[in-house]
Image (cartoon, rainbow, N blue to C red):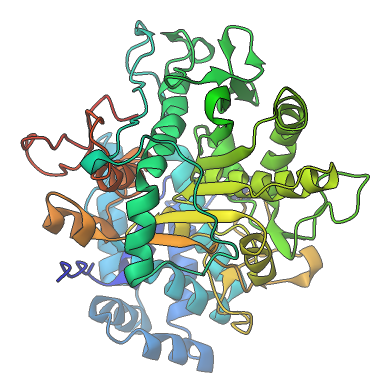
Amino acid sequence: MAPAPRRAPSALLLVLALLAAAPPGGAAGAAARRRPPRRGGDAGDVMGTALLAVVNADTPEGRDFRRRHQQMESAAAGAAAAAAGGESVALGAAAGSARAAAAAGGTPVDITVDVNYICPLLGDLNAFSNLKSCLLVGGAESLLLQTYSNACPDPAAAGAGAQLQPPARAAGGGAAAPRPLPVRVPAPREFEGQARAEVLREEAATYTFLWAAVRNIYAWWTCSRDEGGSLDGYLLPAGFEGVGGDITSPGAYRLAGRPGMAILKRQSTGQLVVALRGSATKNDWATNFEYQRLLRPDFEPGFPGAYFPGEVHSGFVKVFRTVWPAVRAALDAEVLSGPPGLAHVVFTGHSQGAAVAELLAYAASKYLAHRGRPLVVDAVLFGSSAVGDSEFAEGVAALINIRNVLFLNDWIPRVPCTSSRLAGRRSMPACLPPIVPVPTRTGLRSYWADYQQSWGRVPFSPEDMPAQREAWAGTNLLRPGSIQSINRPGHVCSYWCFLSTFVSDLPVNGCVLQGPREGPFTRCDSPALP
């Protein structure tokens, strides 16, 4: 039996406390600074007070909101205190603690949020007040941006740095990776039971190879010469050569001036691999927050059907458009030309890179068919956020050979929040980009219903980990301090640990969350895990 996910204290109270703890700054802080100053207050106080007013309002919506969260006893106690004429005692204490910690130069560490509560809470709050839900979203986004840092830990590091040769030997003597995936089109919404076991048995070694190839982009980027380090370039997997790219690092491409994508080929097996890293700058994170959707955006003028189905996350479309010309050129040179052209094409990525990889795979499939070379294009995604609505997810699953590998305690794939087509205001709130704590006025929308996770899901849970399952069971609890600390276990190490069980030549796995290294299991904070 899987270890039961650990429960946070009151989710409502803790999210409110998180907002109260948010230091002024970022776009939300800038918006606060444009207003007349409030004596003795800051941006966190403004958001916390506004949210308390919503929760404690003597209105049908307010009463319904409190009724739906009666199980959160500490939040109810805070509401009662505020109804008596004062600020919530608990929230006030949390805010006071945060201010004291900030004055001492520290960051509050005693705030805990359960990932299972984030989207239900946000949907309830948006049904109650779009303004207040945007205050919450803007405050959380501002906090994430302020705490994000990607400084190189060792600027003198040279060579390949923390990059690792992607594993090629499947556990148990299986075939070498990577291999073209068996065609499963249309993909199911989720591989379950025996189907999941079969998919992992046949394909997981290839997932692991692709995961390591993606993570090597991060390892190079952090200490690349662009960032003040000394790393020489992207480490090509054994047997592969780069396609195009930077003159000093074949196959490696920069996104907005920084290493972000690799295009690789192995002529002997006819494979073309396109790999993209996820968010690695504050601008990347700001792009993630541009979650308003575009209706059937085009990607290649000049031929019928050159558009994405349904409604698609505008930030991800923006990144797609910056990399598509290079990908199209690689397809022209390596698939549509050459003696012989490559026949197996796979797109892969992590986080934002996974979302963009899905868009690239769909566009590549359409483009190749238009050019008279129809191929089944593979896509292997790791920790991807929802990219679009139901029409988009169904359209992609019907065209490309997609696998969406997801750790169930990873909070990143939960945002934007998914919901049904009929969820109405109990959906992801629509707020103005860039991040400001006010509701959107674009199309007069106050919500984005029907955001959907991509199909072809291959889920895994703490029970699937080869070590420290009890510790992994607690990764649904976020303790904000810095974006790296709350991202690393669930959004990074979980994929290393789970996938390591399917290969025999991966020297690190990040399975240990507590205590020293245990036998073959390495720590999640290992410098070899970028």
